Length: 202
Image (spheres, rainbow, N blue to C red):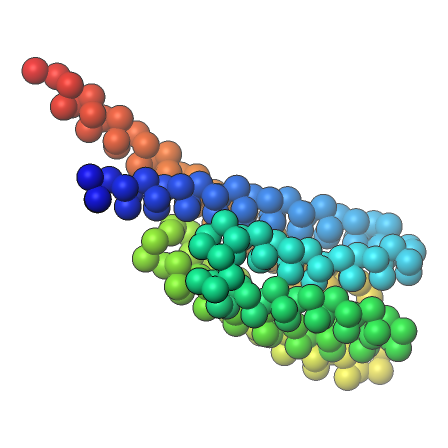
């Protein structure tokens, strides 16, 4: 009975993560599409998108933590919520300076949030599938952040396309984790059905 309850809790957690990863992937795809189209032609749209990106990350981490035991049980996400909320304000201020400042701000945030995402994935490794992709995503986010900071020091002004490329990679990893979880849950469901079917036969 206890084992079955744990198994049901694990499946419920993975069902939530699957939906969560698909939602994050879909948002990132829409954000990247907007950035590469209207965001390239309008500074106002680009600025809105750049502010929206960390704000969305803060909200997403808040909801995920709440569905996964609360902020107290998910310290890395609690910190990420604070960091992303703070970065939203920093991006607003940086937009008043230049895109170089914005890229530098995104660089710092990418490093910090990437490492926190990596930590969350390591913590979930034993209970949820698809976390290897989240670990890769977190590590690459940190590396991209370091590159952003380097590029921000160059004389030429960057554009939103630089951040859009980073967001596109993030969308890929979220989608990959979601698909991995979908396949894993489907296989487990089939195995469970076969087991119960086998038990039902004389």
